[in-house]
Length: 399
Image (cartoon, rainbow, N blue to C red; front, side, top):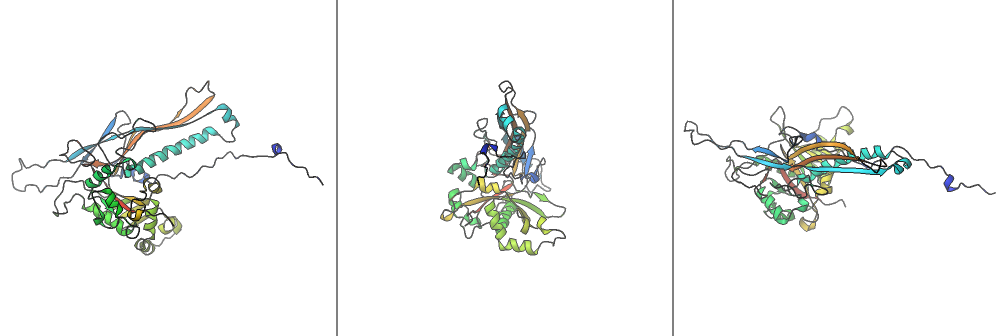
Protein backbone atom coordinates (compact mmCIF):
# COMPACT_ATOMS: atom_id res chain seq x y z
CA UNK A 1 0.00 0.00 0.00
CA UNK A 2 1.40 3.40 -0.99
CA UNK A 3 1.03 6.01 1.77
CA UNK A 4 0.71 9.60 0.71
CA UNK A 5 3.52 11.78 2.03
CA UNK A 6 3.36 15.50 2.58
CA UNK A 7 5.50 17.68 0.40
CA UNK A 8 7.81 19.71 2.62
CA UNK A 9 6.32 22.92 1.26
CA UNK A 10 2.85 21.80 2.42
CA UNK A 11 3.76 20.92 6.00
CA UNK A 12 2.37 23.23 8.65
CA UNK A 13 4.97 25.37 10.48
CA UNK A 14 3.94 27.62 13.36
CA UNK A 15 5.94 30.32 15.11
CA UNK A 16 5.09 31.78 18.47
CA UNK A 17 4.71 35.54 18.68
CA UNK A 18 6.24 35.63 22.18
CA UNK A 19 10.04 35.79 22.00
CA UNK A 20 12.23 33.86 24.49
CA UNK A 21 15.16 35.92 25.78
CA UNK A 22 18.33 34.68 27.38
CA UNK A 23 18.92 35.51 31.03
CA UNK A 24 19.56 39.09 32.11
CA UNK A 25 20.00 39.61 35.86
CA UNK A 26 18.87 42.72 37.64
CA UNK A 27 21.67 44.72 39.22
CA UNK A 28 22.36 43.87 42.87
CA UNK A 29 23.93 47.30 43.27
CA UNK A 30 20.53 49.04 43.08
CA UNK A 31 19.61 48.70 46.80
CA UNK A 32 22.89 50.39 47.76
CA UNK A 33 22.59 53.33 45.37
CA UNK A 34 21.25 56.67 46.56
CA UNK A 35 21.59 60.44 46.37
CA UNK A 36 22.97 60.77 49.89
CA UNK A 37 26.71 60.74 50.52
CA UNK A 38 26.21 57.91 53.02
CA UNK A 39 25.21 55.50 50.23
CA UNK A 40 27.72 52.96 48.94
CA UNK A 41 27.11 54.10 45.35
CA UNK A 42 26.48 57.85 45.46
CA UNK A 43 24.25 58.96 42.60
CA UNK A 44 24.91 62.52 41.37
CA UNK A 45 22.72 64.35 38.88
CA UNK A 46 24.71 67.59 38.72
CA UNK A 47 25.66 67.08 35.05
CA UNK A 48 22.10 66.60 33.80
CA UNK A 49 21.67 70.32 33.06
CA UNK A 50 25.11 70.99 31.61
CA UNK A 51 28.79 70.72 32.40
CA UNK A 52 31.86 68.72 31.41
CA UNK A 53 32.79 67.15 34.73
CA UNK A 54 31.80 67.10 38.36
CA UNK A 55 34.07 67.62 41.33
CA UNK A 56 33.15 65.53 44.35
CA UNK A 57 34.11 67.40 47.57
CA UNK A 58 35.75 65.13 50.13
CA UNK A 59 36.49 66.38 53.64
CA UNK A 60 38.05 64.43 56.50
CA UNK A 61 37.06 64.91 60.13
CA UNK A 62 38.95 67.28 62.41
CA UNK A 63 41.42 65.19 64.37
CA UNK A 64 43.45 67.61 66.46
CA UNK A 65 43.48 67.72 70.27
CA UNK A 66 42.41 71.36 70.49
CA UNK A 67 44.03 73.81 72.88
CA UNK A 68 41.96 73.67 76.07
CA UNK A 69 42.62 76.83 78.06
CA UNK A 70 45.55 77.76 75.83
CA UNK A 71 45.68 80.36 73.08
CA UNK A 72 43.34 79.62 70.17
CA UNK A 73 44.66 82.27 67.76
CA UNK A 74 47.38 80.73 65.61
CA UNK A 75 46.49 77.18 66.67
CA UNK A 76 43.41 76.68 64.48
CA UNK A 77 43.11 73.32 62.72
CA UNK A 78 43.19 73.24 58.94
CA UNK A 79 40.37 71.49 57.06
CA UNK A 80 41.72 68.69 54.88
CA UNK A 81 39.70 68.59 51.65
CA UNK A 82 39.93 67.40 48.06
CA UNK A 83 37.75 67.73 44.98
CA UNK A 84 37.68 64.46 43.05
CA UNK A 85 36.85 64.89 39.35
CA UNK A 86 34.42 62.58 37.56
CA UNK A 87 33.80 62.68 33.80
CA UNK A 88 30.73 61.29 32.05
CA UNK A 89 30.66 59.62 28.63
CA UNK A 90 27.88 58.46 26.33
CA UNK A 91 26.41 54.96 26.11
CA UNK A 92 24.43 54.43 22.89
CA UNK A 93 23.12 51.44 20.96
CA UNK A 94 20.54 50.84 18.25
CA UNK A 95 18.84 48.19 16.11
CA UNK A 96 17.87 48.84 12.46
CA UNK A 97 15.96 46.87 9.84
CA UNK A 98 13.75 47.56 6.81
CA UNK A 99 10.08 47.24 6.05
CA UNK A 100 10.58 44.02 4.07
CA UNK A 101 12.10 42.23 7.05
CA UNK A 102 9.46 43.60 9.43
CA UNK A 103 6.65 42.36 7.22
CA UNK A 104 8.01 38.82 6.91
CA UNK A 105 9.13 38.27 10.49
CA UNK A 106 7.18 35.86 12.67
CA UNK A 107 7.55 38.19 15.68
CA UNK A 108 7.36 41.92 16.21
CA UNK A 109 10.90 43.13 15.62
CA UNK A 110 10.26 46.67 16.86
CA UNK A 111 8.86 45.66 20.24
CA UNK A 112 11.57 43.03 20.64
CA UNK A 113 14.27 45.57 19.82
CA UNK A 114 12.90 47.99 22.39
CA UNK A 115 13.01 45.33 25.12
CA UNK A 116 16.54 44.33 24.14
CA UNK A 117 17.74 47.94 24.21
CA UNK A 118 16.30 48.49 27.68
CA UNK A 119 18.05 45.35 28.87
CA UNK A 120 21.31 46.50 27.27
CA UNK A 121 21.18 49.84 29.08
CA UNK A 122 20.78 48.09 32.44
CA UNK A 123 23.56 45.62 31.73
CA UNK A 124 26.08 48.23 30.61
CA UNK A 125 25.62 50.28 33.80
CA UNK A 126 25.99 47.17 35.96
CA UNK A 127 29.14 46.08 34.13
CA UNK A 128 30.66 49.55 34.39
CA UNK A 129 30.02 49.57 38.15
CA UNK A 130 31.77 46.20 38.45
CA UNK A 131 34.78 47.49 36.50
CA UNK A 132 34.88 50.59 38.69
CA UNK A 133 35.26 48.47 41.83
CA UNK A 134 38.77 47.42 40.81
CA UNK A 135 39.68 50.54 38.85
CA UNK A 136 42.76 52.52 39.83
CA UNK A 137 41.70 56.12 40.60
CA UNK A 138 43.40 59.01 38.84
CA UNK A 139 42.76 62.74 38.56
CA UNK A 140 42.96 62.64 34.75
CA UNK A 141 40.15 62.09 32.26
CA UNK A 142 39.71 58.40 31.46
CA UNK A 143 41.21 56.91 28.30
CA UNK A 144 38.79 56.34 25.42
CA UNK A 145 36.25 58.99 26.41
CA UNK A 146 34.20 60.17 23.40
CA UNK A 147 35.67 57.40 21.25
CA UNK A 148 34.13 54.10 20.10
CA UNK A 149 32.78 52.33 22.16
CA UNK A 150 33.47 55.05 24.72
CA UNK A 151 34.51 54.65 28.34
CA UNK A 152 32.38 55.65 31.28
CA UNK A 153 34.70 54.12 33.92
CA UNK A 154 36.90 56.83 35.40
CA UNK A 155 40.49 56.11 36.34
CA UNK A 156 42.35 53.14 34.85
CA UNK A 157 40.53 49.85 34.36
CA UNK A 158 42.49 47.08 36.05
CA UNK A 159 42.71 45.15 32.78
CA UNK A 160 44.50 48.13 31.20
CA UNK A 161 46.76 48.95 34.17
CA UNK A 162 50.50 48.49 33.95
CA UNK A 163 52.58 46.82 36.64
CA UNK A 164 53.76 50.28 37.73
CA UNK A 165 50.13 51.47 37.98
CA UNK A 166 49.22 48.53 40.22
CA UNK A 167 52.29 49.04 42.41
CA UNK A 168 51.43 52.73 42.87
CA UNK A 169 47.86 51.90 43.83
CA UNK A 170 48.74 49.13 46.31
CA UNK A 171 51.41 51.36 47.89
CA UNK A 172 49.03 54.28 48.33
CA UNK A 173 46.35 51.98 49.80
CA UNK A 174 48.54 49.89 52.11
CA UNK A 175 46.01 50.10 54.95
CA UNK A 176 42.98 49.09 52.85
CA UNK A 177 44.10 46.10 50.78
CA UNK A 178 44.05 42.50 52.02
CA UNK A 179 45.77 39.61 50.29
CA UNK A 180 44.43 36.26 51.43
CA UNK A 181 44.03 35.47 55.11
CA UNK A 182 47.04 37.36 56.52
CA UNK A 183 48.03 41.01 56.46
CA UNK A 184 51.64 39.84 56.16
CA UNK A 185 50.95 38.79 52.56
CA UNK A 186 51.07 42.47 51.63
CA UNK A 187 53.84 43.89 49.46
CA UNK A 188 54.30 47.22 47.72
CA UNK A 189 54.81 45.16 44.56
CA UNK A 190 51.37 43.98 43.55
CA UNK A 191 52.61 40.89 41.68
CA UNK A 192 54.51 39.76 44.79
CA UNK A 193 51.56 40.29 47.12
CA UNK A 194 49.01 38.52 44.94
CA UNK A 195 51.42 35.62 44.40
CA UNK A 196 51.23 34.97 48.16
CA UNK A 197 47.56 33.97 47.79
CA UNK A 198 47.31 30.18 47.72
CA UNK A 199 44.46 27.74 47.19
CA UNK A 200 44.64 26.18 50.66
CA UNK A 201 44.92 28.96 53.23
CA UNK A 202 43.55 31.91 51.31
CA UNK A 203 40.03 30.94 50.31
CA UNK A 204 37.23 33.36 51.12
CA UNK A 205 35.96 32.67 54.64
CA UNK A 206 34.13 34.51 57.39
CA UNK A 207 37.53 35.09 59.02
CA UNK A 208 38.88 36.77 55.87
CA UNK A 209 35.83 39.02 55.76
CA UNK A 210 36.33 39.94 59.41
CA UNK A 211 40.00 40.68 58.68
CA UNK A 212 38.95 43.13 55.95
CA UNK A 213 36.43 44.67 58.34
CA UNK A 214 39.14 45.13 60.98
CA UNK A 215 41.30 46.81 58.34
CA UNK A 216 38.45 49.20 57.53
CA UNK A 217 37.96 50.08 61.20
CA UNK A 218 41.68 50.87 61.62
CA UNK A 219 41.90 53.28 58.68
CA UNK A 220 42.73 56.84 59.64
CA UNK A 221 44.85 55.79 62.62
CA UNK A 222 48.63 55.60 62.73
CA UNK A 223 49.46 51.96 63.63
CA UNK A 224 52.76 53.05 65.17
CA UNK A 225 51.13 55.74 67.32
CA UNK A 226 47.81 54.48 68.74
CA UNK A 227 45.13 57.14 68.80
CA UNK A 228 47.03 59.48 66.50
CA UNK A 229 45.30 60.48 63.25
CA UNK A 230 47.50 59.76 60.23
CA UNK A 231 45.80 62.11 57.78
CA UNK A 232 44.24 59.35 55.70
CA UNK A 233 40.51 58.87 54.98
CA UNK A 234 38.67 56.74 57.51
CA UNK A 235 36.21 54.24 56.03
CA UNK A 236 32.80 54.85 57.56
CA UNK A 237 30.33 51.96 58.00
CA UNK A 238 27.59 51.86 55.41
CA UNK A 239 24.73 51.61 57.86
CA UNK A 240 24.36 52.41 61.53
CA UNK A 241 20.97 51.33 62.84
CA UNK A 242 19.17 52.67 65.90
CA UNK A 243 21.68 50.90 68.12
CA UNK A 244 25.46 51.17 67.88
CA UNK A 245 25.62 48.30 65.37
CA UNK A 246 27.77 49.08 62.33
CA UNK A 247 27.36 47.39 58.96
CA UNK A 248 29.56 46.97 55.91
CA UNK A 249 28.58 45.44 52.56
CA UNK A 250 30.95 43.02 50.83
CA UNK A 251 30.57 42.33 47.10
CA UNK A 252 32.02 38.98 45.97
CA UNK A 253 32.29 37.01 42.76
CA UNK A 254 30.80 33.55 42.34
CA UNK A 255 33.96 31.62 43.23
CA UNK A 256 34.64 33.57 46.42
CA UNK A 257 30.98 33.33 47.41
CA UNK A 258 31.07 29.57 46.79
CA UNK A 259 33.97 29.20 49.22
CA UNK A 260 32.33 31.49 51.76
CA UNK A 261 29.15 29.38 51.78
CA UNK A 262 31.25 26.25 52.34
CA UNK A 263 33.18 27.80 55.24
CA UNK A 264 32.19 25.83 58.40
CA UNK A 265 31.93 28.99 60.48
CA UNK A 266 29.57 30.66 58.02
CA UNK A 267 27.52 27.53 57.44
CA UNK A 268 27.11 26.84 61.16
CA UNK A 269 26.14 30.47 61.81
CA UNK A 270 23.35 30.30 59.24
CA UNK A 271 22.25 26.88 60.44
CA UNK A 272 22.24 27.50 64.18
CA UNK A 273 22.10 31.23 64.87
CA UNK A 274 19.19 32.29 62.65
CA UNK A 275 15.62 32.67 63.83
CA UNK A 276 13.43 29.77 62.79
CA UNK A 277 11.17 30.92 59.94
CA UNK A 278 7.43 30.92 60.54
CA UNK A 279 6.72 30.71 56.84
CA UNK A 280 8.47 29.15 53.86
CA UNK A 281 12.24 28.96 54.60
CA UNK A 282 13.04 28.74 50.89
CA UNK A 283 12.10 32.41 50.57
CA UNK A 284 14.35 33.87 53.28
CA UNK A 285 16.87 31.33 54.58
CA UNK A 286 20.26 31.87 52.85
CA UNK A 287 21.04 28.17 53.02
CA UNK A 288 18.27 27.70 50.47
CA UNK A 289 18.17 31.03 48.64
CA UNK A 290 21.88 31.81 48.11
CA UNK A 291 23.12 35.17 46.87
CA UNK A 292 23.33 36.86 50.28
CA UNK A 293 24.90 36.07 53.66
CA UNK A 294 25.30 37.98 56.92
CA UNK A 295 27.99 37.52 59.57
CA UNK A 296 29.94 39.72 62.00
CA UNK A 297 28.39 43.00 60.85
CA UNK A 298 29.02 42.28 57.17
CA UNK A 299 26.37 41.80 54.49
CA UNK A 300 27.81 39.58 51.75
CA UNK A 301 26.31 39.96 48.25
CA UNK A 302 27.21 37.71 45.33
CA UNK A 303 27.90 39.57 42.06
CA UNK A 304 28.64 36.92 39.38
CA UNK A 305 30.00 39.59 37.03
CA UNK A 306 32.98 40.09 39.37
CA UNK A 307 34.14 36.60 38.39
CA UNK A 308 33.26 37.16 34.75
CA UNK A 309 35.03 40.51 34.41
CA UNK A 310 37.64 40.84 37.18
CA UNK A 311 39.05 37.34 37.76
CA UNK A 312 42.87 37.47 37.78
CA UNK A 313 44.00 34.42 35.84
CA UNK A 314 47.07 32.52 37.05
CA UNK A 315 48.55 35.26 39.26
CA UNK A 316 48.41 33.46 42.62
CA UNK A 317 50.68 30.88 44.21
CA UNK A 318 51.25 27.90 41.91
CA UNK A 319 49.60 29.96 39.15
CA UNK A 320 46.11 29.73 40.64
CA UNK A 321 43.36 32.18 39.73
CA UNK A 322 42.74 34.97 42.22
CA UNK A 323 39.43 36.77 42.69
CA UNK A 324 38.94 40.22 44.24
CA UNK A 325 36.27 41.13 46.78
CA UNK A 326 35.19 44.57 47.93
CA UNK A 327 34.23 45.49 51.50
CA UNK A 328 32.36 48.78 51.15
CA UNK A 329 31.40 51.53 53.51
CA UNK A 330 29.95 54.94 52.74
CA UNK A 331 30.90 56.65 49.50
CA UNK A 332 32.72 53.78 47.83
CA UNK A 333 31.62 54.59 44.26
CA UNK A 334 30.28 57.61 42.40
CA UNK A 335 27.64 57.37 39.67
CA UNK A 336 27.37 60.74 37.90
CA UNK A 337 24.48 61.01 35.44
CA UNK A 338 24.48 63.47 32.56
CA UNK A 339 21.39 62.05 30.87
CA UNK A 340 19.12 59.25 31.98
CA UNK A 341 18.44 56.55 29.34
CA UNK A 342 16.01 57.76 26.69
CA UNK A 343 14.67 56.06 23.53
CA UNK A 344 15.78 57.33 20.14
CA UNK A 345 14.84 56.49 16.55
CA UNK A 346 16.25 56.80 13.07
CA UNK A 347 14.87 60.03 11.61
CA UNK A 348 15.67 59.61 7.89
CA UNK A 349 15.69 55.97 6.81
CA UNK A 350 15.62 55.85 2.99
CA UNK A 351 12.11 57.25 2.46
CA UNK A 352 10.80 55.54 5.60
CA UNK A 353 11.74 52.09 4.28
CA UNK A 354 14.47 51.60 6.89
CA UNK A 355 13.48 51.91 10.52
CA UNK A 356 15.77 52.10 13.51
CA UNK A 357 15.30 52.19 17.28
CA UNK A 358 17.98 53.22 19.74
CA UNK A 359 18.74 54.20 23.30
CA UNK A 360 21.22 56.69 24.70
CA UNK A 361 22.44 57.74 28.12
CA UNK A 362 25.32 59.74 29.55
CA UNK A 363 26.99 58.89 32.83
CA UNK A 364 30.31 58.21 34.51
CA UNK A 365 31.23 55.82 37.30
CA UNK A 366 34.28 56.10 39.52
CA UNK A 367 35.87 54.75 42.65
CA UNK A 368 35.89 57.67 45.05
CA UNK A 369 39.41 58.51 46.20
CA UNK A 370 41.11 61.37 48.01
CA UNK A 371 44.52 63.00 47.84
CA UNK A 372 46.00 64.85 50.84
CA UNK A 373 45.60 68.62 50.93
CA UNK A 374 49.38 68.94 50.73
CA UNK A 375 49.42 67.30 47.26
CA UNK A 376 48.76 69.95 44.60
CA UNK A 377 48.59 67.63 41.60
CA UNK A 378 47.01 64.32 42.61
CA UNK A 379 48.51 61.24 41.00
CA UNK A 380 47.79 57.52 41.17
CA UNK A 381 50.36 57.14 43.94
CA UNK A 382 48.73 59.76 46.18
CA UNK A 383 45.03 58.93 45.75
CA UNK A 384 43.58 56.79 48.55
CA UNK A 385 40.33 54.82 48.17
CA UNK A 386 37.70 56.66 50.20
CA UNK A 387 35.18 53.97 51.22
CA UNK A 388 36.46 50.53 50.30
CA UNK A 389 38.78 47.74 51.39
CA UNK A 390 39.85 45.57 48.45
CA UNK A 391 40.69 41.94 49.10
CA UNK A 392 42.17 39.16 46.98
CA UNK A 393 41.40 35.49 47.65
CA UNK A 394 41.74 32.13 45.95
CA UNK A 395 39.53 31.89 42.87
CA UNK A 396 40.13 28.30 41.76
CA UNK A 397 37.51 26.98 39.34
CA UNK A 398 35.24 24.07 40.18
CA UNK A 399 36.89 20.70 39.57
